Image (cartoon, rainbow, N blue to C red):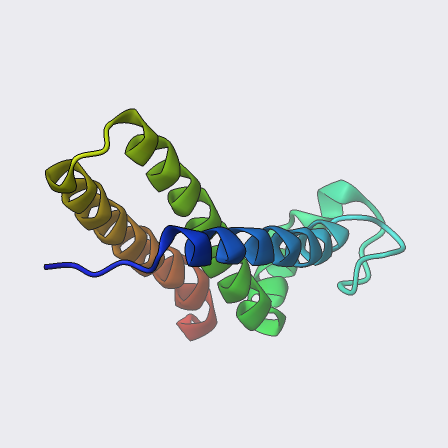
Length: 122
């Protein structure tokens, strides 16, 4: 049987991830703002050029990973809460927990592949 954390504990993590998302997403978006970008771009369009994006992936892969994990947890935990409010039987709870865990792991694998494939390429 899949064991999930208590609902109150997951709500605390929901708040923590919301705050973390604000910080990490703020940095991620700041990469695109001319004059504020650590990539030294002079326009938004320049920040989207392939070599600038690859530079960002190489320099900030840890931040992108934190963003991925935080956004996935926050979004899927919110979806889990909505689905558990829909029906409150133990079988439904188990099904929802399994689906959320599978989605989390699947999206996490795809996201890490997307982030780290750019680092591995020459």
